[in-house]
Amino acid sequence: MATTHHGADRGVWRNWASNVAVRPARDVAPASVDELRAVVRQAAEDGLTVKPVGSGHSFSAAAATEGVLIRPDRLTGIRTIDRNAGTVTVEAGTRLKDLNAALAQSGLSLTNMGDIMEQTVAGATSTGTHGTGRDSAAIAAQIRGLELVTADGSLLTCSENENPEVFASARIGLGALGVVTAITFAVEPLFLLTARDEPMTFDRVTATFDELHATNEHFEFYWFPHTDNCNTLRNNRSTGPLAPTGRFRGWFEDEFLSNGVFQAANSLGRAVPAAVPAIARVSSRALSARTYTDIPYKVFTSPRRVKMIETEYALPREALIDALREVKAMVDRSDLRISFPIEVRTAPADDITLSTASGRESGYIAVHTYRGMPYREYFAAAERIFTAHGGRPHWGKLHTRDADYFSAAYPRFGEFTALRDRLDPDRRFGNPYLRRVLGD
Image 1 (tube, one colour):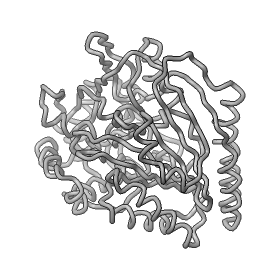
Image 2 (cartoon, helix red, strand yellow):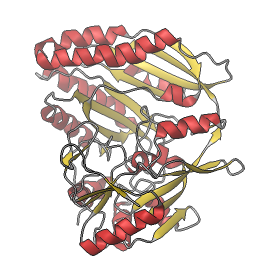
Image 3 (tube, one colour):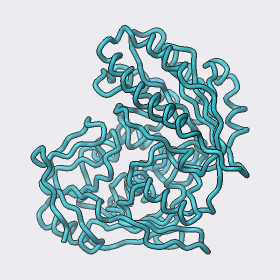
Image 4 (cartoon, helix red, strand yellow):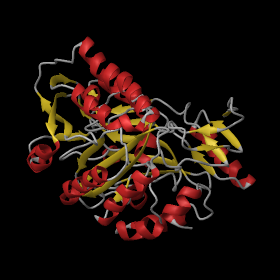
């Protein structure tokens, strides 16, 4: 039977960053697809909306509901690995960290992934989670098949060959088309990546960005506001040997500096905003060059324990550096005090209807603030720059765009909304966020 949760805070569900809180009418954790179908059918009888919540790592209110909140905690695990087809089929509530570890034990890996792996596979793909890559795209672009429960409680499977019009949209479905119950991903034999992390000045990294992007399979960098300092990360396939970062150095840089000291520095900056520029200069010099070689998920992902609020936009790749320079100029001339670095990544074009990289090679700029610091003025100023360049906001992060904006930003927007009208005419999976971004 589906279990019903009653939280300590009288049934209030909060996302990871605690910027979204909602009190659902029911909070359930189905143990099987059949139980989930029954939950959806019962919700329809009771006139309630339905939302699965994943791990709550979205900053947007994409998963918020006052109806039936579905926790994926019991819909986990690998169903099948097909080595001949090069695929793995996994239950929707499986955390990426568990999938990555299980695949590695089987000598397999995803081709690319984002930089955190706490999310469920369904939550990560439904909101368009991505890493960085010259040739390899977001996690959803690695999907080969999907299973979802639709508004009437029926089970729908889709792939390039089966219900292809659903497959085109449902890989990044925003929770608007149904509740994803299983995903089939393309996988490949486990490989090694050599990571090279190196400090670089803002002027140098922006002047040589096209070359750095062209000559590395996975390139990204962080710029520390109020400084001219960046940290660059290059990840490329390697024949080995395996040479992981030393235990102490890995702990020192990934835990002590990136989480422990960073947490303390941000807390100080929140208490004394005038100190932020000085703190940024120290923080941005703390990380030194390093090179190591390991399996993909140990290179691509890292722990992220310092709570923040974030907005991120995908821009046409050719507009990326101009937009970043505009953001730097905006910060430099403002009274803003920004203690979090800005992250810059890329992705090739893909063919998913509402992917932020749909139909165009893309560059991403992610701006963050420490939780509890003011962010609205900063994010609004950044959004003005991003939207002037035709930017598309990340579906799981904060933004102020609406359906009118998206209908212009996505050439196939009408294709998605027409499919939603067919699969969920009564808006069983609706909520205020979807009403804003997709319209009624």
